[in-house]
Amino acid sequence: MNELQQALDRESNLPDTMVKVAQLPSRGLAYPVGTEIHYKPYTFGEVKMFSQAQGTMSSAKSTEKILNGISVEGMDREDITFFDFLYIALLRRLSTMNAVEFNLNVECPQCQHSVQHQFGWENLQFEDLAAPKLPVIADLCGMTDVKFKPLTVGQYLELTRRNADEDPVAIAAMQSSLDYKLAYNLFNNAIGDDAATLEDIDKFLYHDLKPMAVTCANTECGIVFSASLDDEAALINPFRKSEPTTGSRVRFGN
Image (cartoon, rainbow, N blue to C red; front, side, top):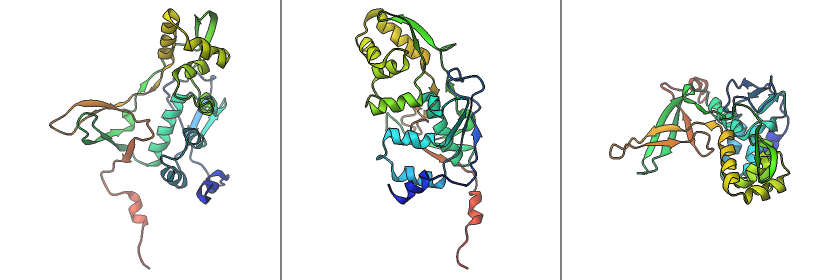
């Protein structure tokens, strides 16, 4: 562990600027009544750490580091749904830039032209949790009253320890009320109506930030394509119509 990481892991006496999350893709349906979630912008040290570790930090370690900047009242913070967590992680990134408008830099999937798409906070829209209530309950695979809830951050971290975080069957098993190994075996071998029911449950539990509709700036192409904002690889920069206010704080010489 280098000195920068050691410094970040030590408790700081500096005050934290915490921001309350007003809206979530899950609509809070997965949380106890009265739960409040707050986040803080990334510090300079955290930004440098993520920059230095780009491409080398494991998904689990990155998740844990991001989670350190999130505070939850009313439940354990690892009980945040994974998709809500991705949204809050984006909020941490955007708030760090201290701007109201941003540039999303992406590549057109058709002509590979570099496109700069401008957006503001008001453009963040959700694909809400489809289930009207939780848990989602189903009879399937010979089992009755199997309950399903959205994947949490804690469950995602457990899946990473099992090297199964990209396995859709493992995710479904982790979301169910059944024993994980039993559920995995049942769901992996599901056919017919059982398989269709699992597909329906996956749709009921899905919630996320809607991708941006971006128009290719290449006049010879001009297609409209979707670009995800909650992708850690997304290149987002602050958009400023004037010089940064911090410029007046920099001096040279005596």
